[in-house]
Image (cartoon, rainbow, N blue to C red):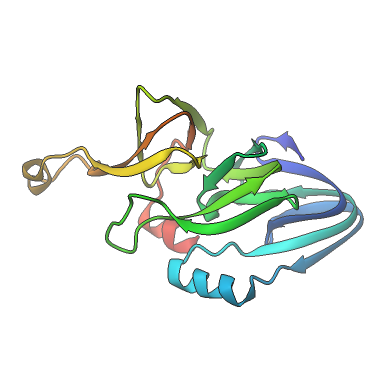
Length: 206
């Protein structure tokens, strides 16, 4: 997997890999594209969380290019023993050597059922998309990082997460700053943030 340009990833397939359904923009070689079933458990989870990953299996030998809505593409390397948690709407493609499951983000028991993410583990490369150039912010044990829940793309999964209110109730009653709740990340690792927030209309389209 390699970054072809800011808006497109190239994947040299020799065997099998997974990609977001409909993300292939071009290919050459002997490749087959098939919808990947999520199984009964996966479908159930998707119905409950709304965080389904509509995937397709790409198999054979050849090269394929993937993109999504001209969003910026980047790659995260998942090392053995590491886990990376990411919002399903940001996943573009990934190596078949990576396993994923949908989990609740700890400490985010907020109205609307909390936050749900796809957690990737194993060893391999994960191709992601986001609007604009992603910011990668290191997190250390001494200094927690606070991120907007609408702007966060993903983070190293061993970081501790909790919701943080940065506004007083009085300020919220007076109209507020529009920044009422953030996700607080603590520990050693990094977080990826996109420079634009999801608007309600965009959130419904995803």
